[in-house]
Image 1 (tube, rainbow, N blue to C red):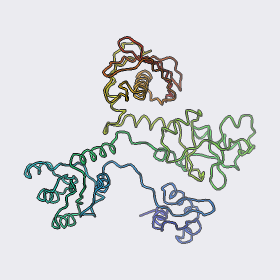
Image 2 (cartoon, one colour):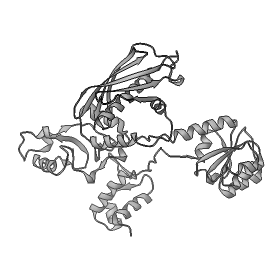
Image 3 (cartoon, one colour):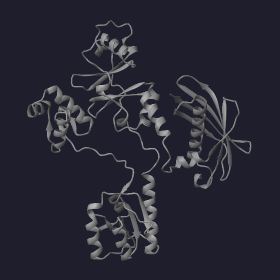
Image 4 (tube, rainbow, N blue to C red):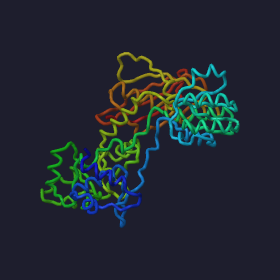
Length: 437
């Protein structure tokens, strides 16, 4: 049986887009307390069902869908190949797992055709029918049409049949690239997936005193708390430095730091980590566009998310993956002060004049120095600063020897000196700084 909270969420979800939502009206219509209604509305706001707009109020909005997805739909394929749907439109939102090129005899195709696949074929009517009967959609290349019987079959089995003017090779290349792009190993992690919601954290109001701050700091692990006004909007932040030598009944509003650095749910953890490192912050308040406080995100949350994303299994193949796969470790024995790596330059890593791209070299240095940091300290690291000097041009097929040496380290940061050699000639030098967990 759904709770009162769930019933209110369901009610809000059933409202038309643009309809106003208020605590009083929901409490009255559903015969519930205003406190229950208020908490449910705040939860609906975090779910993206409603939004609070200045001088307008809280209104029902269209829920934003995530832009990332793990596989392609037939509708996406239609857009990729700039095609036209001839039939089976009801099945456009189905997902495909693989595609098959119809360039063999029909009896040989049966072992490859399976449900949720896509048959790419020309004007072979019998193959089109075989695919639809086997649970696969059809993409007709070369701009060919099909027969009314095939279109009727597509409508009957709810599998789309699409035509495109592209040839088979071009279509296969486009779809293969699209599927690879959507299966990249590291999905971008956003603040909305890891922040601590308001009801699970602590904050202060402008009416609180220093005594309240001291009480919260003893109950939690944080020494930094957001401050909100009576409408729940962020107006400042207070830290342990702000309350030094302040008496208990001193107003928080008088000691807080106004216009603090904030995070929003659509931001990536990479950008948030940079903000935290740059300003030396352990906690950031998470707010809506109207500065409504919805939670906090800590440095620990960010570091943990980055470490998890780095350990995800490889599915897609990014440019970074190609570079990283070319880096090999050299055993340096018991020496824990430096690490040695080998990197082979490949043709796709060159720039327009035939030498190693500056961006690729920077990526190689960042990867090797980060790898050294993990091997020595057994902790994840976030790149803070990289200063690179490219002395001599590095050619195709050069075998680079990269030596990473630990210059300085403390509890929060490490500096690495990187030297890049080719045939015992110094080609580049870099100084890299990391923040470590």
